[in-house]
Length: 113
Length: 110
Image (cartoon, rainbow over all chains, first blue to last red; front, side):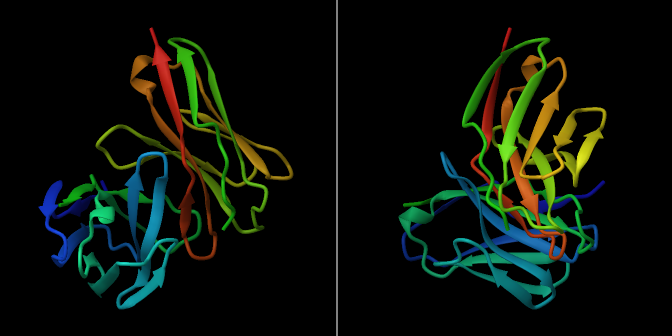
């Protein structure tokens, strides 16, 4: 059974803080993704990575960066958190093969005060 | 990747069949169609996936016409536990990248 885990379920940070969200998958998947989910907007892709040290911007990369130093771990970084980054953050992974299912983590609900 | 358009919300009653239609006019040749289900405070969960014609599994059926510009998720005999948000996605057959739409909130009533 595929497992995608995220470091925290709930996080409260202050404006201007640097925030790290960690995601780990145990299925040797090549592709990993970070989404944010907001009411009325659905899931929006922030960044994805198709290999170690490789990344590609999604639809809303502004204010975020990512790190993929190891295949199983994909980190989302908020360099200077702002209140408009309060959201639910979801990590997902999949193999590189075409048409493969994405497996999602449980999500991290981030509140920036 | 093609954007998807689906109804914002739908209501149904227990035991009924529910059909949710999604349009994806700009779908490319190598793209595929996937549907996910999401309950509150959980990550989305895969339901079904297809490329063309009809796909059926133990949970749902997916109908895709020949032009592939739309698809319909069919849930047979829904129950209260099927109340959730359903997302239609187009995925790239080349990169595996998925783009989510806004989703359809299905409310099943007793």
